[in-house]
Length: 586
Image (cartoon, rainbow, N blue to C red; front, top):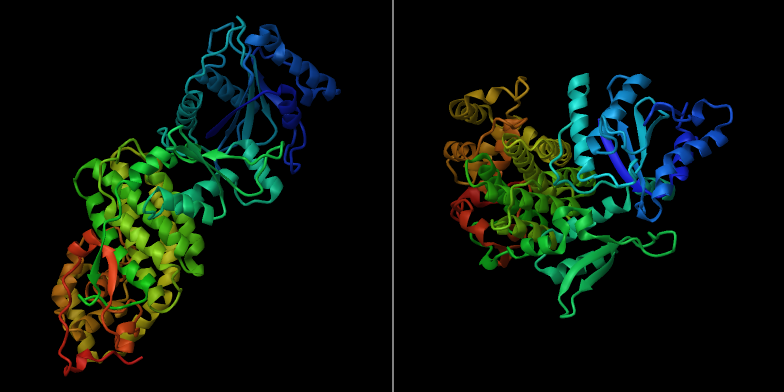
């Protein structure tokens, strides 16, 4: 059950809308189900609704007129209460009881208070009501409505429990502000798929992903096509910023500006400065140190995968909560970077994952003093490398990264659940579902090629690697859903690991020990990508590094200091005369 509260100044205009046909003729049988005294006139049940509507408006506004100048400018309190899909249909009497509980909880009309505010509850659909109250009490004082939304929401949670409804997660005051009804109606009227507030929130998050400093952040906002207005102190220092969508104007023809803090609590300029203060700690290192010279998007995705693995380990550990909360912020920033540079085939799912995980990055656990440089550097590298192609090594490394991103979002869900953060845990699981869908799209081609390569191996070689699998991972033959697993891709990867000069069993044990595999939908896939990353194998089978193709000299590239320091040891390179040194045939 979801309450949605707003304030206004036109009682009659709101009643006309509630008793009218709706913007898409969706209102049916509008009528009162409750009122402050049980005797309010009902335009929905009167043969002359226009006259009755005027009488109802006058009755609701009586105390407002009596209070005159002491009445609040926005004297109309409006709360819609909607049941969740699948909940049973309520009778008018049940809706009346619900309305009375909510106006009592919010402080509009407390039980037993003869001077409570006047209110009505209107029903024009099966699944919701609208409560309208005027904010002047019988003693002509204004009601105390501190935290009215939180109180109404808490009462809805109690109603859900008592009436056997779908239980929604309780809020904790850290969520971004929801769009208002007026913003939603405006989006519908102008044909936008979402409100300006939601579009701007996502654009600001993406501009912040991997930004090096405040100047670059504002530059990215303008490059994204947003209107930006920076507020300055007399000293010239920036105090805050506002953003607006081009063409989004109010009734006076002026741009509709949104301060960053009104888009999300962590998008205010002071909060952004705290994040930017972490820096991105880059240094120049030779790419010849065991690193294949893939395309920039592929190379950055490989490096980011290792960084995400370490974040997942930290979230699953018993470390400091502040450090874990910082990792969540960094993972969200990295996901924003991946979403805006992803191939077309996965872009929609990754954007949905980033939007969902945004809720998981905010809780009451503070992360100001923790280090997020590794994840911020990974995000910066992905942004600078540009968009990745959805095929070849780019597509393979995208699948490699997404496989690990699924695990880190599930680790985030466990971390939040253990601390009672219900909304954040739910958001993490939603992000994981979108990431799984994106992973299946990205991994389809490379995994199909690997399966074919595994089946094509000589029987004796295949049997040897299957024995290794059974010895190292006895549960390998069963997937998470209890069905038999196909090991062809993993067998092919073990063969290629051995061909590259590694001990396949030792490397497999190392991949297993990196972190738990219990949450993996397909353990085989996770191990395939871990092995290919730490052994420096192509993410797309049959691909050859550009350095090997062209015989180019080693170059220098900018990578994250933390990532490089914790990177796996370089694979031994076979001698030039060794046939294993030759690139595999396509």
